[in-house]
Amino acid sequence: MSAPLTILGLESSCDDTAAAVVRCGGNTGADGAQILSSVVYGQAALHASFGGVVPEIAARAHAEKLDHCVEAALDEAGVTLADCDAVAVTAGPGLIGGVLAGVMCAKGIAAGAGLPLVGVNHLAGHALTPRLTDGLAFPYLMLLVSGGHCQFLIAHAPDRFDRLGGTIDDAPGEAFDKTARLLGLGQPGGPAVEAEAQAGDPARFALPRPLLDRPGCDMSFSGLKTAILRERDRCIAVHGGLTRQDRADLAAGFQAAVADVLVEKTRRALDQYLSLAPAAPALAVAGGVAANGPLRTALTVLAAGRGVRFVAPPLRLCTDNAAMIAWAGLETYAAGARDGMDLAARPRWPLDTTRAPLLGSGRRGAKA
Ligand code: KG4
Ligand code: ZN
Image (cartoon, rainbow, N blue to C red):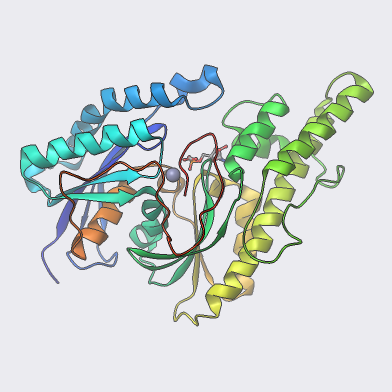
């Protein structure tokens, strides 16, 4: 085994400013991978009163917080820049002001400390996390479901992903957040809708399962949110407002519809993936929506029924963080990747350029 690698990672593509230090014994593969620190400064409070992430505010907050965040990550890890082998930074996709702030900060550190620079695709960070946490072997199937993303990827190598499908409009987390707003629940909407749904009847309202009638793994969630709006307004028209039960039934119906779509599309993605006859088949999930209890249960059952290992990294590594960026940087650095001072910040950066781009454009910015 070659010498251990220690990588500093930076993330600032949406509304979390994050820095982390990850160390691994030289060879790629997760044997002995260690997260020495992972610091996340969330910006939720800054954006709360606007009902969504404001790109200008996000960019300014990233620029203010990044160096403190890096210092905290180095301190917590008990290392200095001299102990690091490279700086990895999210170079896209994401809100351009934030991505730029991170890339500029990383360039400054790399130039000042004489360290190599590695630009990381944010989606690759999410997609490679199961190797950091569970040592998954390639190829594995990945379902990325967050507030900004929804796609199925077959991970073949640190820099090779096959995108089987994704959302053509809203991401599921975004739909959860909008549904919560429509029902007068708090933000983030996912946990609020899940809690409300516990007392609800998922079958009371006839809600659509968009794109299930079409072949393939593409998805759509914006029509579902519109259906919730319509049913909500119908309830309001009948008794002048939403009863507690209306709210619970709408939440339960919405959650069940999202889970049905995701599970059926995962079934199809698994068919394609399993046709590759992987030696150690595995399905992994990442993104904030992966925290959803009923969805997790349904995916666990689906994977078990197909003889596929199911991996869901701990939530703090499923949502945006810099450990995943440091790890993806470590894997690509070990494979020879290096970037120069001309590394560009990219608002859009599809992981799989062989497929036609997805249309999606959600409020949280990061598109692919
Ligand atoms: O990955 P993430 O932290 O951030 C990005 O989108 O980048 O995901 C946040 C999203 C939010 O839309 C939130 O409502 C959703 O994940 N979420 C959930 C749950 N917890 C968080 N959605 C459904 N059920 C949950 N329990
Ligand atoms: Zn993300």
